[in-house]
Image 1 (cartoon, rainbow, N blue to C red):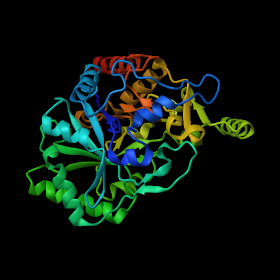
Image 2 (cartoon, rainbow, N blue to C red; image 1 turned 120 degrees about the vertical axis):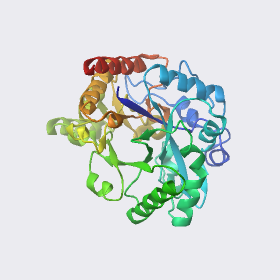
Image 3 (cartoon, one colour; image 1 turned 60 degrees about the vertical axis):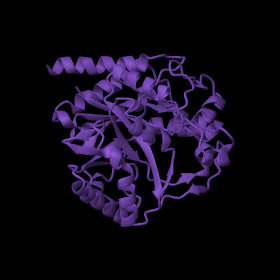
Length: 363
């Protein structure tokens, strides 16, 4: 059966920095709850169902998420991890507690979100300024970074590919010289600490720059063509949408029915490429009218997308039959598969059904 690894956002609990920047008690739920419809038929706000407005400081919430993911065929979570250099971290508490407590007993991996935080992350007015800068201080910092995570790397729950630790770097080309040094340093440290090395994966937007990324020492790329999907639509469709949005100053929006067909391609059949499964997208809770929205996503359309991905990866060796689910709980981007009040568990159900149907075909 295909290996579905879901991106997991740890933003659902207050931290002192967010209190300072956005107001006391801020978390992702703040943006989600205040979202409003921007056009006729626009579904906002999206309200969580089974899991509720959870707080990730609570082990009960983390366990409930894992149980739900396991039930519907997801192999594990890829927790977004923030290390800005010189030991500066943010939102590390949920993952640290998962490692220290041993619960939930559910596979995990890490994705280093190596990008600066901008003021406009939750600013619907579009104002922009850097509030935390991503730095690359050098080998001493890369070593400190590694050893801060060594207990996780040695945990039996950590997800592996061919016995190597699965680790994603979000911006592989942000600082190529330092990223190359980072990868080399971590591979050496893994060997020194009795580990079999890392399986490094970098983001390739719309499948571009793959060879450049692999040349830095990555084992694979994961392809994400979400926000660039409009460039792949037929020319007449693009012109129509552009004129419509310009004339009435509408938010950028496209039909999921048109978009999902471009989320993946035959390139994803390569052993060095990992496709991305995208259930839906609506960035307006974070960005207001400056957001990017896919309209009309349904469980039925999502199933078509999932089945296409599963067909593409089924000829790979079992260890490499991986697909990234983007995402488990990115509610502020309308990019989640957790149950909501409109569809309940239907997206999870069609994911599970698709996995079982493809598994039967392979047997």
